[in-house]
Image 1 (cartoon, rainbow, N blue to C red):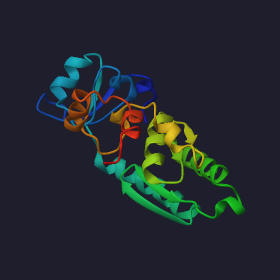
Image 2 (tube, rainbow, N blue to C red):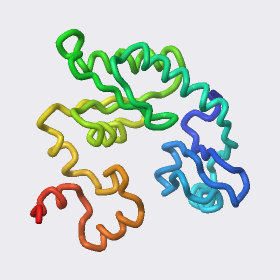
Image 3 (cartoon, rainbow, N blue to C red):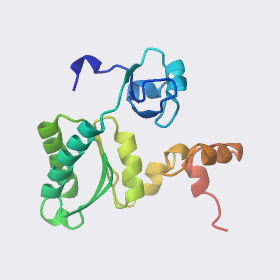
Image 4 (cartoon, one colour):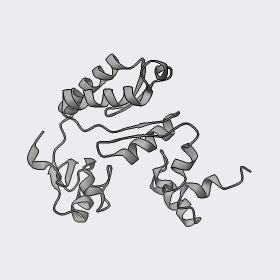
Length: 188
């Protein structure tokens, strides 16, 4: 990793205007940049961003390192993408404590790989994914059982996994901006 790029706006992807943003740093997101947008638009929105060509080999190597640590430390896990995992820590509360175990695993990954790692801990995948997003960059967040609804209520509907731009715009046009609005609707 290049320390000169720390805290700088970074775009990863094709370097030509026809390229696509494969990933972007948090510093670029405040300008409206996100993965999947054209590199041309991303550079217009954040002209000071440094553009780096992606290197799948390096990403795979780091992903394999993280996978190996998680495999060693957790009883059951699912790898859902190159940089996203779900670990089932059910039953570990009796011996170690879920939060304590997750914190130890996160520390081990950071210590051994130097990668920033965030996690969200809850009773289900959806809330865990949302909590991880809220913990980023490089932090952790636990949502206790029974508080899931309260945790997600004030958040933007954009935080719901699988809500893309079209669905987001449709819901916004209906006056739905926050998750609590959906929670308050009748189930009919």
